[in-house]
Amino acid sequence: MAERILLVGMMGSGKTTVGRLVAGRLGWRYLDSDAEVERSTGRTVPAIFAADGEAAFRAEESRVLREAAAADGDAVVSVAGGAVLSPSNRELLARSGTVVWLRARPGTLAVRVGSGEGRPLLGDDPAAALVALGQVRDPLYASVADAVVDVDGRTAEQVADDVLAAAGRPEAAPS
Image 1 (tube, rainbow, N blue to C red):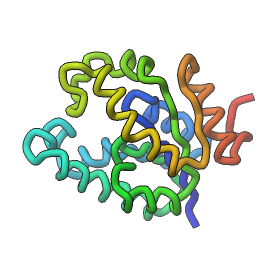
Image 2 (cartoon, rainbow, N blue to C red):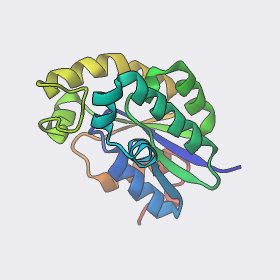
Image 3 (cartoon, rainbow, N blue to C red):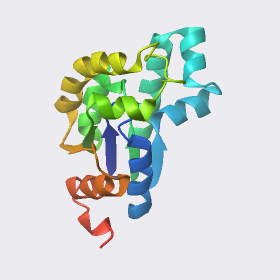
């Protein structure tokens, strides 16, 4: 059976950067939920939100998560930040591999997402939106996570080392 490392966390937590590093170190396939939605629909996430609304995006997000969980071969998956809002997605995550929550303080996230351009849920006040989203999502991330890796003040390489250790693959970390 194929192995999976699934990275969950808020936008700006480093799922894409760390996911690519972890996949590269393991020699595994890398999948990014948001990128897969954009590739399969031919539209950006903001365009989907603008034309069809959040519910349509969430449906696409769930579809690509199901595909990533069922794909052949070992893979690292950066899961879209809001995927945990769906109970069926949380159930799927729990049975699909090692789930690692990349946890970051709201201030770290706000710095990383900047103006929030291209992130439809952040509106005119990204910092406040991130706090509000975290209040809803953090307990859901905690409920699905096999491990938690704090990212504040750490390099992507350090975080990747911890993800590999959490997934029982410390040998893939550089020495």
